[in-house]
Image (cartoon, rainbow, N blue to C red; front, side, top):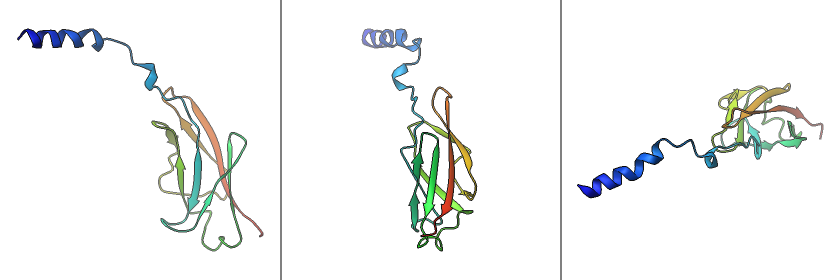
Length: 120
């Protein structure tokens, strides 16, 4: 009985402590990103241009396989980050589209994504 009481008293002081800031994730960086039309199909990796723009350059050889108005987006984002609008589903990147990656502090980093067909 005494052991149970002591164990309970050990946890009481910690239950009212503030959130441990070591577990707040502040990163909003997309480390890599690519597009494809179907799971397992041809893909194109995005090229980062500055901090905010990602362009998918589709070679002539892959242009028949990738419809830039109907793409799946795959990205590596930080733990606990949110993307708005989400990357799930299909996306039209024939014109620039903005996506915000938000961290645990609700600080967004907005990226502009778009796909282009190359002549070569």
